[in-house]
Every structure is written in C-alpha cells, then in structure tokens.
Image (tube, rainbow, N blue to C red; front, side, top):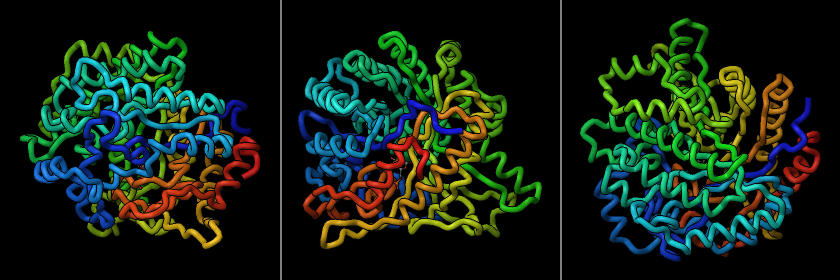
Length: 481
Ligand code: BGP
C-alpha cells in the first residue's frame, strides 16, 4: 500500500529556533530568550541541567545583547522568510509546520489588545506559503510562552493562563481563517521533563513542583480543548491535532519486571494523548496522582470541556527509543529527546547519544493507531549531526539520507499495515538553533545555514546533498526512497 494521494510532505520548525529578531517590531521576551548555550547536557541529571532558575532569568532580562542567548538570534528567519519559503517550495513541500511566537502578538501575554505588527508578520508568512500552494500547519505553542507569564504566575501552574492563551489563539484563528491545520501544544507531555521551557514553571518558585507540573499539564489540556472548540467554530473544516513526544520504551530483556517497567513508562507517555483523544483521564493515571499525593484542581466544567472537544488527529515527534528495567542500576543510560533512558545495545546512536531506531517508528505508528483509531501525523523526525560546508559550497550528508530513507521505509511499512497517516514533516528542513542545547552545530536540515554556535557566519543558505534526495521522495510521493 502506498502513501495517500494528498499526503502532506514537508518540514517542521519553531519560531524561537528560527526567527531571531527577539526584540523587533514589539516582540516581548519569551522563555526561549533566556535559554543559554549548553553543549554538554549531563545524562545523569538531565532535568536539572536544562532547568532555568530565577537568578538566570533576572540576569537574562538585564542583558540586552544576544551574545549568550542563541535563540534570540535563531537563523534570522524573521528577515529571511521569503528566501526560506522559496527553498521549501523548491523541495516540493505540500506543508510547512511552523509556530506563531505568542510574544509577537501579545508581548507580555496578558495585554487586552494584540500587537498588530505581529499579526501582520504572520499574515505575510502565510500568504507567501499559499503563493507556492504550501499548506500551513501551525503550532500555537512551541516552547516560547511569554516570560512575563512565567514570572507573574509561575506559568501554566496557574489556571489564569488558560484565558491568556485562549485570547491569543482566538486572535490567530480570526486573522488566519485560511489555515486549516492547527496543533495546540508542542510535545505537551514534556511539561514534566522540562517544566520551564514547556510551561513557564520556575522550579525554585514552586512549593510542590510535581503537583505544579501536573496542574500545568491539566491547564494545557483544558486550554487545548477550549481552543479546539473555538477554531472549529471560527474556521469550519479546520483540523486540530494534539502533539506528543513519542518516547517508545522497550524492556531491557524479557524479564517480566523489565516488561512491567517499560509498560509503565509507555503508559505515562501515552496519557496526555489519552486525555486529548478520548476526552478523559485514564483510571491508572488518577490512581498515580493519588499514590503520589498529587492533588489537582480539576473542575466539573473542565471535565465537560475535555470530553466535548477532543482532537481530530494525533501528531507526534519521533527521534529515538529507550530501554527500561525493573532494576535500572545495571543499565547503561543515554540521552534522547529531552529524556534519559537505557541504551539499546542493538542500535546505533547519533553523536548526541540519541539512538537511531527506524523500526521503532513503525512500532510507534502501529501502537498509536491501534490505541486511538485516529489519523496520525508525524510532525517531527530527524537526526542532529555536525555537517561540513565544503569550499565549493556543497555539503555531503549521506548519513542524513540513510536516516530518512530508513525511517520513511518504516513509515511506509506501517501504512502497509493499515495505519492512516496524514503526512510527514521532517525536523528540521533547515538548520536551526537546537531546542535542548541551543547549539547551531547540531544540524538537522536539508538546507545548511552558515552560522556557528556563537552566531558568527554569513547566514547564507546552501543545499546539502540530502536536499535533492528529499525533493525526489516528495516528487514520487515516497514511491522512490
Ligand atoms: C523536539 C522539539 C524541537 C526540536 C527537536 C530536536 O523535542 O519539539 O523543538 O528542537 O526536539 O531537539 P534538539 O533541538 O534539542 O536537538
């Protein structure tokens, strides 16, 4: 069986990793603007390592330069959007997944009126995409909430943010009625892994961090359901997806204790999708809350909103898989996508330690489809590597072609198994600043951007060898990989 005829091939980026222009045209500070360069994320204490504390935030606010804050620079996509979209059109993209920086529309997040310059900017981006028949796929929240809301309310831990977000989303829907596909929260499950980046929670301000994290997640579920209702009303025919980090976990060995450990990890990974797809909390999760003394503020109205406004499709990122064991002391640990888990001896890994597991993508697709029976969308998948720009302007990246070839083959196999797949957007079609480490040298693109970790370079865009390869894949609708 082949990919559907109107399969949405494309790529995915996020505003805070691409745009730069952190203080241009009225944009306010976001949580991404205080993130510093961290090349060496410690595997042992990953969560602590990616945390941002009050002292760092204060320092960042008083620092008006972009020197220590790579996401303030991005790849200056804000000023290069026409050139970049033209390159995406040249790749044959049917869709581009990108996010709208909340702080361009509401610099502090709680103003009563939006910043018109922000709306105008995204209007131009959407028009440019439509010029090439590229369907926008917009993420409303991708690790870039207003810093002001983090400081004032401890982010999403406070349910007041639900209305701030709904107001922002409403402005997007009313101004961009020609956009059909929307995602609410990028990797919504990541709130419990990096609460500041994902939900604006400043850990040193939390009296009960675990409870704040799950409350924030709940508030995001409600906000997501609320805006789903809104967009269905404002844009008839629109489609909303939840977005999950697919962290596929295998048992280290066939020992039942290890199987149980993997099962529990997978259940925790699935539950945000359960809530958004089925419209209610799974019983096992409610039991987990009880056992861990997590007392959430969940109103009857929240439960109705969740039940009545489930998502239309399920989107997810997939990069790697991990191992779990009943007793993890014997496991070699490795890092993956904002997570640490057991290293699989049967799989190769990237320079950053993320395992490469194409079959895991097939497994994930089958599991998700079997569990939910809803259309799926792979909205992130790719491999971060060092690339070399040759003197003649070429970049030879056979490893990237190999990675994508294997993953697309696995995806095809899943479709052949009967999975209903809407599309695929690679992460990321163009080099950008890494979410976890803020490195520029961790490159994902088919398009090379001449900038280094310090932001030095011409900023010029070059096509890598993988560019023509992916273009051909799209041309043949994945028939020829
Ligand atoms: C996902 C994020 C992206 C992206 C990607 C790769 O978790 O949604 O924003 O960056 O991972 O991660 P990194 O940039 O840390 O290599």
